[in-house]
Length: 207
View 1 (cartoon, helix red, strand yellow):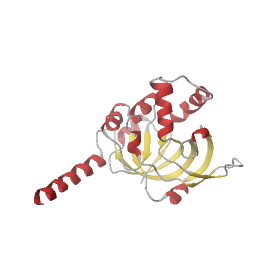
View 2 (tube, one colour):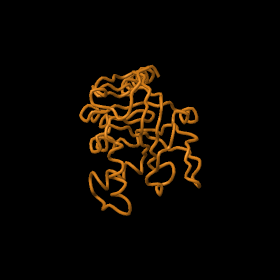
View 3 (spheres, one colour):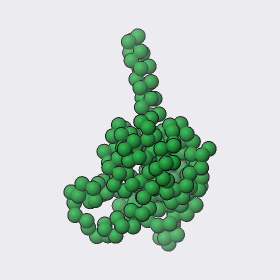
View 4 (cartoon, rainbow, N blue to C red):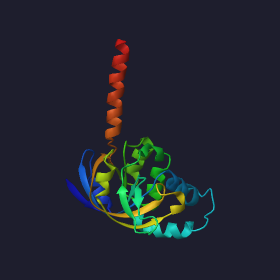
């Protein structure tokens, strides 16, 4: 398996191809629906004014996302009372929910990887080529196993969004993923979808 350290440069991203297994190490940020909508509305489309600690958080996450990875994950976290945070479970969330936002977020923050499960759609795939970035597919149904790759929780932003929706800053080592959308227009998810549709059409034709 190829070992890649975060932050990731453009050359490395362009060299990755669909189907390539990767071990990721470094610092990444979790982010789901609430985070992506907050980023878009407040800092990209600017349809809402920054409030509370918005500007402070924005300045803090910018260097983390430069060449960085966003992980679609709603973790189970222990130590909430003592702030001695530890990921108990860290499985991926279904990524397609972020399809309206993802490419714009990656471009704005110069992020180079997005990680989750189930793949994403044509807007994200186009963004993979333009930005560039790749989609890393994480193992679904293995939340406790994946949590072992999380060496340390370095901090958290927007905890007021709720534990699953907050931005957790985590240090990972040898986090196992597979590239399923690359910066050359390749998408394993699109291939599977097309193949499945063909089989379904053949079955319906025989019915």
